Image 1: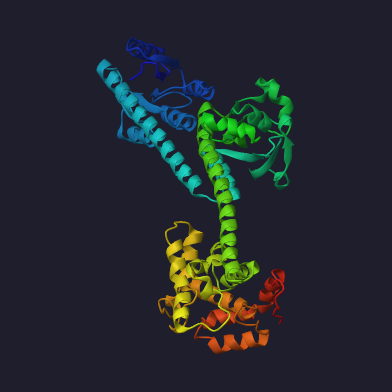
Image 2: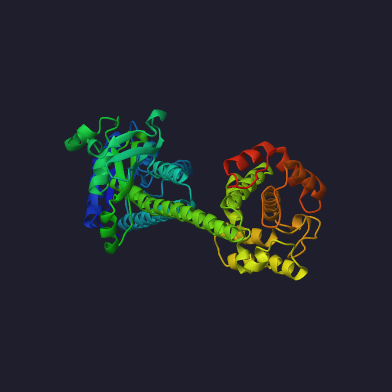
Length: 514
């Protein structure tokens, strides 16, 4: 065990104090002595750090048991050992209850004292390792949770809440750096007035700005000892605080690229203040917050990257859908209307809004398989022969085979829709002849949205139907081609359906009106 571990000896008898001092000093330990409990507590409150506390049981004013109780409030990891010449079962129980680890009897036996210290240091080592392991475990759990969040606001709120909990603080904020790197905006806050949320500060006029510009964390234990930050700390009511940057992770080769497009190196700044109990923040707190900030920065980059990818995916999906519809001489607005009808129906029938959005993004690819159908069949102005109709039907399987290999949620949903949007509720559809609820809800929804829009639009093989004709057809096919419950939901919300149609009108094609 390292001999720099300090030991505090408390006894009202000077002879005992000096004897223990000599024994432990000869073993190479750093030893402090105190004549009573009050003086010992003063040493602990002043920040003196000890590993082992030797205390007499019987002392005036404050006995050893009371001292152990108060000392462990100041330092819960302190390992107490009681010294007594009057050991009883009652005093032993009381001492153990307050956290005493061992005892030695007066007059002292040198080997017993050495053994007690050795055991106490081993216990302290185990406590320290367990505490460190628990800290690592908690930080790992936080990291896992951070990595699983896909919404930026939810992510920032979680990072801030986890940070405050880990360092036992009450107040804090996360400020996002603007794209031009000149300003910060409060994106998440706890313990601050609500009006501060969304507040903007210039980089040059705030402590968070200093952290962002210098790309380094800041620990201030007492603002009075850091006069250079006083002008920037006018909003703070606490003397001690920590601010750490959420920095972009990049290789040296990426740094030039970041600089060339003017992206700030720091995406956000995490600020924490008002430690519970009036304590000051420590280097350990700074290390903990830096670890959380590092994981948070990576997660924030990922969230923004996923958002960019999703936006790109939306554009690609709609573009592909429009290409297919154009090839079959249908308007690009057809896929947009079908997408919006499908989302509306998904929401109204009880799907979660996030899942309804997946449906909206996936439906534009419902006919993607038509790229495998010859133009002569796809755009034939006359009635199709039986053989040609069988060719047309292959677009469902072709579309599914094109999309099924993707692991993305949108394209997986699109694969299901492509395969099943021509299945009929009574089992007479294609390509699999599925029926009822064996047809995926995505397929049943898209079937209604697609047919409703197709009937109301001019095509090479037909003229647009009137609204009444469409209504009559859906009533006739309710429970046959279409899920009856979904038909009812769809037409119960027909005003919203018509509003969507008005937002995406046919181009030079007769429009349906209610």
